Image (tube, rainbow, N blue to C red):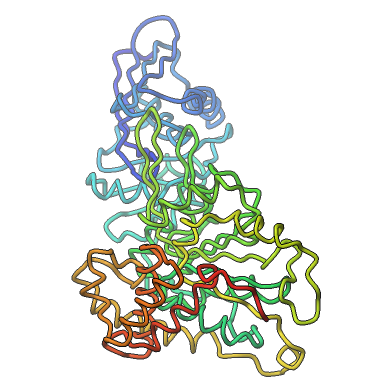
Amino acid sequence: MYWGMFAKVESMGVYALKGFRVTVEVDISRGLPQFELVGLPDSAVKESRDRVRSAIKNLGFEFPVSRITLNLAPADLRKTGPVYDLPILLGLLSASGQIPPLSESAAFAGELSLDGSIRPVQGALTMALAARECGISELFLPAENAAEAAVLPELRVYALKTVSELLQHLTNAHLLSPMEYTPFESLISHCGLDLSDVHGQPEARRALEIAASGGHNLLFIGAPGSGKSMLAKRLPGILPPLTQAESMETTQIYSVAGKLDAGSRLLTVRPFRSPHHTVSSTALTGGGAIPRPGEVSLAHNGVLFLDELPEFQRSALEILRQPLEDGKIVISRAAGQATFPCNMMLVAAMNPCPCGYLGHPTRSCSCTPSAVDRYRSRISGPLLDRIDLHVNVEPVDYESLSSMHGGESSETVRKRVIAARQIQHKRLASAGISCNADIPDSHLRSLCQTTPSATRMLATAFDRLGLSARAYSRILKVARTIADMAQSEKIEEPHIGEALQYRTLDRNVTYHF
């Protein structure tokens, strides 16, 4: 029997997108056999007792038959998930003298199978970032998670498939080799969908390029089959490549949500999320007893596409208003607050009426005027104000559709988008923002200077269209982007005129294709 034995094993925990150090303390003392687990564990952590007991026996070791007290420190933070199975097992073996004491500069995380194999966990990249901050130099993770953590050159990350190979490493019987660090530049890849697949639609393609150049939200309005979804899916391919910082942020979100494929490193393609219109408010924005990111956060640094926009629940749409303004969403629970970033481009699509054929050149609309009004009123004015471009998508004619030659490729358009973004970066870097869509109202006057004729045109439009203050600032930002694409230092009258053309629903016009 073992008593009077104590051991400590370092591990990592995750809450929302924050990682923290967890010390697994094991004390084996004289007394009746008992296993006490303290330190605010949830039910999944409490169940680790049975998984660890079976794994120890199946690995050929002896489970201590004594009074066992196991503490997860710090005790004031809730511990969730099966991530602590592996450090608990190591703590028991170390405290009972079956393996040597473990280094405080090494941390362990992993779920155990009953036979001693190691299963993947969620949030490995977040753990790795927190481990680096805590001074941890070695991180032992399940093989499926090790690649995403190995993007930090300061850490030696080891990929584990079974507890047996880990124990051989710890006893110097057979040393493991750490994962090889791969520079971010070698991971960059491109979106497979190409804009050259889209035939016709010059106006919609132009609006898509403007949206990409300035990071603007976009609404496509058109009949079924006109190519709205096809255009939206090709938006990530014309956006600038992810920076390393953006890639780290996005990968963290997907890792915590359990959305990363096994063996994945950093995400290098901007995300494209397209939830069904039956999605709930919680699924869209995130939440749960243990906060998890929703669709808006999974689209961070990418695109959130809402097809059939009026069919979404009103409550789900209205809850988007604040995240679209702030670029983040805060979820409050009794255990604390969780903040998830959601700096994404919103692209939406809708029909002009319930049947979809209002103003169609060859098909007649069967909707009454009141039905059309009810359909459009499902989208509130405040939400429309936050969408910069409202674009009519015309039905594609046979000549364009049957042509062997598509439009410009995504790579060609992307070069122009990157050039426009570089102009914005030079102008906006001092304000701490990256694109025109994020210009705060306090900087509009200094960053969006207009010529006298452009000022007069905007003033006339403001009065005639009854624009809101938010719509006014959105038009000015879009015009600033159009001016950047034309390499114009000031916003001129044609730039304002084109920006006004993208406020279809503000003008309350009939759709003509």
